[in-house]
Figure 1 (cartoon, rainbow, N blue to C red):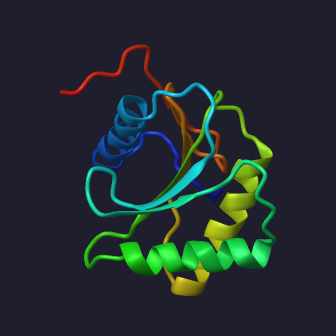
Figure 2 (tube, rainbow, N blue to C red):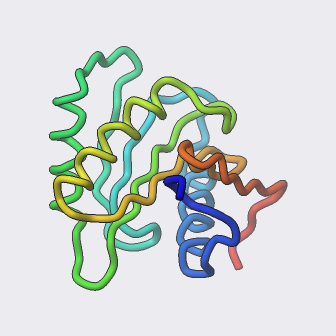
Figure 3 (cartoon, one colour):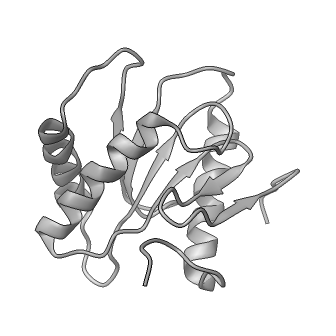
Length: 141
């Protein structure tokens, strides 16, 4: 079976990812900004790493950074989600794949399942499976 999310996405995961998009859309008002890597539960405990636009990191350093975020965000009962917020559309970009590879390695080392998506103002996308959810006007329920 292929990695990543597959339809239908479970209701708890859908709610968490919707929350991630809503939080991003309501808090980030700039059109262009540096990506942020989030690990945790949207709307709850989250560890965040700011990624400067010109930052050059190798795979090993990215793995160490994701592992540190996982340790900070890990809570009993629910494996953390990993999401990358960035400007632009939901097409897969190099930054998505670089952090996906690091998250995959860090989660495998920690023995945790990986759920990772890219989040923009329009929605989310799983870079492994291509499963995407977009909204025209996302509102608080």
